[in-house]
Image 1 (tube, rainbow, N blue to C red):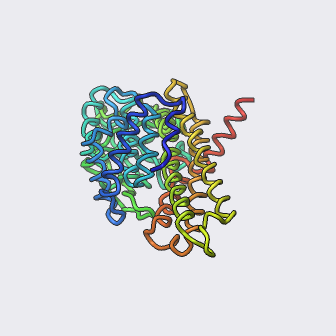
Image 2 (cartoon, rainbow, N blue to C red):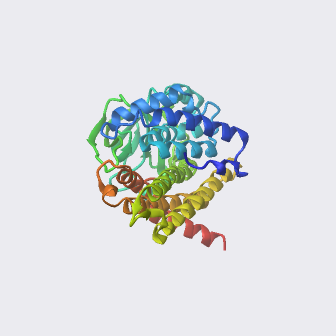
Image 3 (spheres, rainbow, N blue to C red):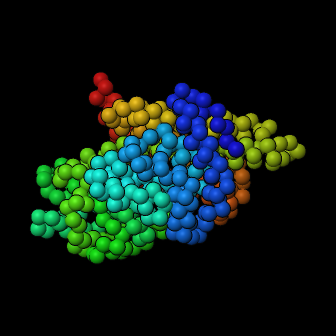
Amino acid sequence: MADRSFLDWPFFEVRHREFAAEVEAWAAAHAERLTDHHDADGSTRALARALGEAGLLRMAVPESGALDVRSLCLAREILARHSGLADFAFAMQGLGTGPITLFGSEELKRLVLPSVRAGTTLAAFALSEPEAGSDVAALATTASRDGNAHWRIEGEKTWISNGGIAGSHVVFARTGEAPGAKGLTAFWVPGDAPGLVTAERIQVSAPHPLARLRFEGVRVPDAHRIGAPGDGFKIAMATLDVFRATVGAAALGFARRGLDLLLHRATSRKLFGAPLFDQQMTQAAIADAALDVEAAALLTYRAAWLKDQGTPRVSREASMAKLHATEAAGRIADACAQLHGGLGVVTDSAPELLTREVRALRVYEGASEIQRVIIARAERERM
């Protein structure tokens, strides 16, 4: 088991330590057992259901409407260390309903959140498009008025996690109140809405449910609008501001798994009659990995703590956490594969699976290059 002494840091309260122990116990008993990397859809459904039955989704989809970012980060770190799909199932229930939790009407919260919290309905966050990923202001999907009480959504979304199996979607569309980012609005769309089409299931190196979706005149009641018309960009960014640090936490969990693998390999494998650990180059790889893990943890939980303290925007700190933690996880996974020699590239071996699981983290919810832009601009503003 990974070192848990960081829970004694002043970022955490007793309730966080208790929740971490609860997640750790569940993950040790269930995460690997319920994970089949060759059946991402089935695993995601089973994991979400089990997380809901255990009550762990209460932190991702809180009844109070208040998201505790430190708890989200602890859950993602622990789950990712055990199973990337377990982390994915937990995270998407939160991200996929985050706009409703933070900005939805009480009626919409009552309609949508209980089944997502129970893990019986999977949630999706439909923001990215073929020509609008990092540049959210370039969204082309439209929502136009259909009478006084409805909207019609037309367009296409892609790279949508849980796409094709979700029963709940938060969809961002252009409603035209102003040019660019100021003319977007968020809507809730159920999975069985007429006109919602799964155009393509997308296969990626570390399998998880992913799809391209088409909206062919999907009719949405105005009561399913989230926030005011034109507030979509603000809602999307506020949601990502909460969840971006949690991506760093997931990367931290993968990094801890990699460090454990490095230490086990180095101390159990013999080379030239001595433990592999005795090689100075091996010690350097382990030292670098340990340093990366500690720095990632500090950056991640600083960002989470600041958000929980009521800091309005933590974009700079969350971007630092995501950037460092995801890049560090990549470095550790590569060192892990290297230290395992031929075993490091055997399909579905622990090092090879880790390498595939961490790679996507440097791309989704803002690629590393975008995080650098955010950080640089924030530094300019601090002058």
